[in-house]
Image (cartoon, rainbow, N blue to C red; front, side, top):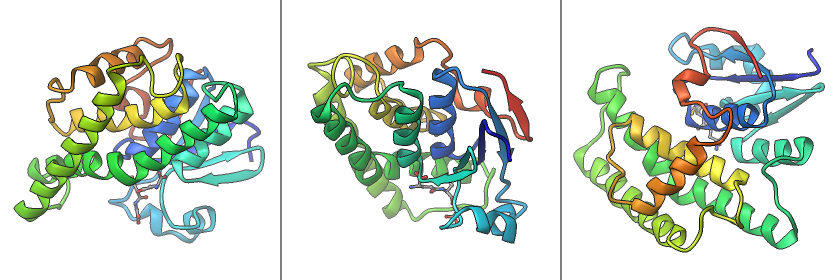
Length: 217
Ligand SMILES: N[C@@H](CCC(=O)N[C@@H](CS)C(=O)NCC(=O)O)C(=O)O
């Protein structure tokens, strides 16, 4: 096992992107192992031995195995000393955003992407229009909340980028890939531009290749 970072996931996976983006912004190289859902790679005994819940992303580092993208971001912030909190209060606020994201932001915005993949027949997915309307209602409401918060600040917590921003930004990137126009949320758009201006920033499909690859720092 390598002493560096190995990331198992898929370019179509929003939580995989969020970990890859963090590593890239920290200028850390990593080995990417593509787990193809279509080929059932997530069901193999080797993968199930790594991933407690059978999900990507999985990150390996120094003989340890990590799952759950938000928890991985916290580990990376702590280990690499980047994009973390300056004090206990900020750490708590960052964690609140990570939990809010998993509860309110990521589910509807990632669903928008799934709906689009199904619509374009790239995956065998179809959704009841009632469900699609519900994704829309929840996604819009979460974006309203975020936009309101960002009206008074440049980043979600404090005055510099943290893992809270990296986490929530990934949802915005996938909402856009899902064909959603987020321009009505002007503060969110301005904030997203700040993340996109960070050195090393890359869009999802520019960062993760469809086959195993060594990603340069
Ligand atoms: N809360 C998890 C979500 C992970 C997740 O939903 N992964 C999906 C791909 S994006 C997956 O592995 N799905 C396969 C399955 O659940 O069987 C995280 O943030 O890491």
